[in-house]
Length: 337
Image (cartoon, rainbow, N blue to C red; front, side, top):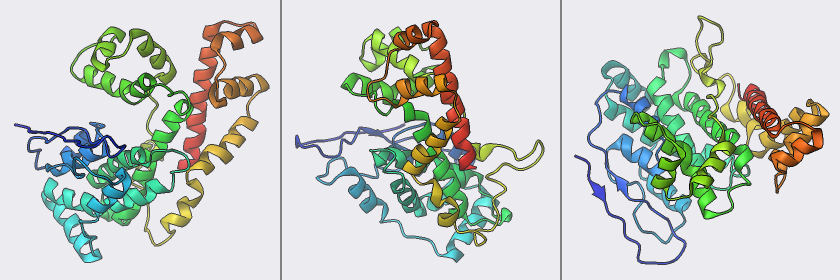
């Protein structure tokens, strides 16, 4: 039976807003359980708690900012020597024990923070990026195969970056639209709530979601249109050929090309600036103008105003916008390969 850990907050300052964290009942003892835990999409703290089956990583009340306190807490877990890591990896492969996988995850939490900080120019809240990076780290541990020749940290770096970049790309067009508390609440919770309800076999209509999240049906409908359908994962899972290994599986020895050198040009804002410029340069004039007015403007033009400008329907402009967003994701993914 899970236990609810009550949170306390004796100050009114803008300190860590630690949510009530539910300790998960003892998980499966198999490493195969990691992907299921990864896919729960909890907060970065809950993710680690869920994998570790322990209390919250952060204290419930603190005067420090979340990042500082998070780094302080994860620093308690020592880094592994090469020999220790190899021993744990062999043990995990032989036994499939999730307890061994937990040790590997803990030892690499600093790596997630390091990589997430590289993208802080592209996303204001670095804890969001750490959350996604932690998911990528656990995915990497669950899929790691030492016989492929890549060191775990090198292999994990690809997964961590993949999840962080996917998060940035998926939310790129929405960075500027969450201005009110209701919009922000929907932005961060709508898709998760939909996934939760679908997982329970419930059709998530706007009325049900508005009731669950405590917002208006109209706001749910508006944000649902803005979010659109979820994008596919980045190409780390893509097969290099029909019968061959995936990109992640094909990574070779880490000594051939240092991670920082190979991925250095993919850091943060450069992706959203330099590659975006190239993407825009290849668009037709009408598509470029629609993209700029709808997705790059501080105050996005309405679909109707653009439709009137080009003498087409509002729905047609929406379709063009959706196509451009999907094309951008594909275009950006090519640089992440």
